Image: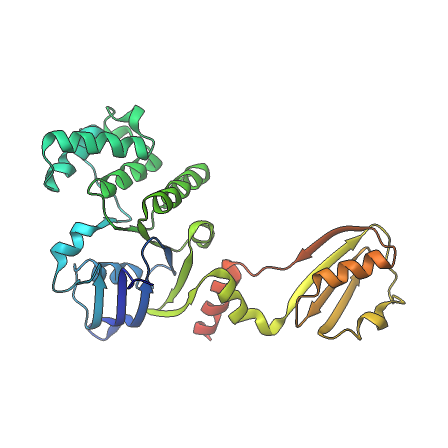
Length: 316
């Protein structure tokens, strides 16, 4: 595997006695969508600023694309596009004019800048709105224009700080879908910082849970779920057409199964807790006993449960 495109080692940042970031270690690989998740004030934006070389670490290092950010902020900015949570455009200029201006700041000649601006506006779905002044743009349209601005220099990495803030639900869905397609089609590495758990869960390959300046955990949803809730076991619910009596004559037989810890009967539904996944065996058992199985559900622990479990542990 190639070296990570973002390498963070023992990174810390203090403001006087306040530790904004403490002992952060994290690797993010090329083409990955990584979600930095945590409440406001957790240290996410401070971490981003250190990645970009906009503020110096109190300790540790950040390498982006092989460059030490603190010592080489200009080369880092050439390969990284950053979209802050608060976007600013010249309201009296059109979207096209704003992008042409940004293209010029990035050293593109007029002809190339115009070509690139049109391409990016088409990519983010604003080609038809290119001649409208940005002062009349909605929040969602401004976020798309911000993404076009970030992409105009064809970065290897894009960093998005709270990109879905203030966008309506349908706009959020479209925006996240756009980010995913950009990453998958062009191999762009995406770091998405947010406190919106559901948004992060929709598109990220991995997440890092950030609380009080510390990275408490990182991984994909499945690995984090197993790490946190594995000891609680698998929970499977089976619903059948027939009413199940309580006590149930078949209960004693089932409770002798290896790994089955507990069962609970509620009318036409039985919930099983086991130390291993017995879903297939349970379905076969019900069918063998001539029960009409209507539905089977295995409980999943989503990002919401994972995040709050870590957050509760930190608070305790």
